[in-house]
Image (cartoon, rainbow, N blue to C red; front, side):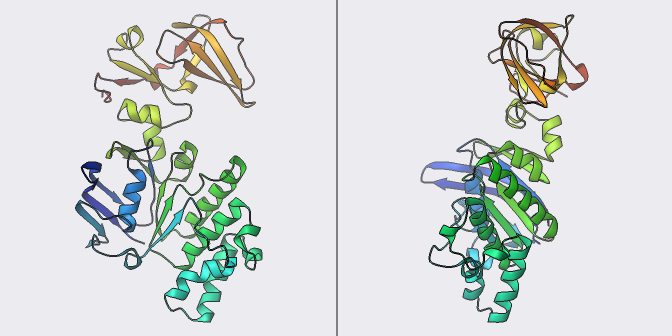
Length: 333
């Protein structure tokens, strides 16, 4: 495993600065997930760690050793891309063995490593097939298996599930979670824009915004204690309700945040609104109400409890779960 430290890392493409002085550390054996909106720099940061991009400034350390000038093959990393990047003319076995073969491993070592990785990912019955004979999920597992055989100290994942359909995303996400448990001596860094992937896979999440770190913490820390309205609105699905005006003023803040599950529909509720739409998901119902805010307020109700459109409702926040933010969007203590 590797302890990764980024000290004032910067990256510019010409006059455009993409990464603007990132300081962070990724602990040995940790599963760190980078999230943020498109263009925030999360994939660029991953490529800087891998060595596929050169930092414009700052230091990148693996176990205390500066690796800025090391080529990717010398960093002990293995990378999994969203495009799979498999050789179409090679079998699954040959694809998984390719990196080892280049490093000079003997035939016995090749077979043992590939067989072990294939068994771990439950693709040992596919070793003689070509990539075109596989499903998208199977191809992605082959790509992951190819990385495993190299026995890296750092695993890097660049949105590996984005090309899969919903069902395959779930099953492959479970495979990656199982892989992390089995390979708990390998540091993993994972880029995604998917909330569920970030919340379910990460030991810690790094939220990036415009090339800077907005907040780092465990999934629950970011969900329950966001440091800013940006994190509050980005982490969680649906995102946190953010209210201004009189509702916020009543709690001495500029912006008041409340999660959908912490609102209760009640005839004597403190706030009022009119239902725009209800989404019945079976186990939960999400009620969208116009309460005079810029965006509809989302109220989560357990079970099958839809409310007809245009219905007038009253609802109240659970006051123990309110979040208060100032004019700059920062959390009030």
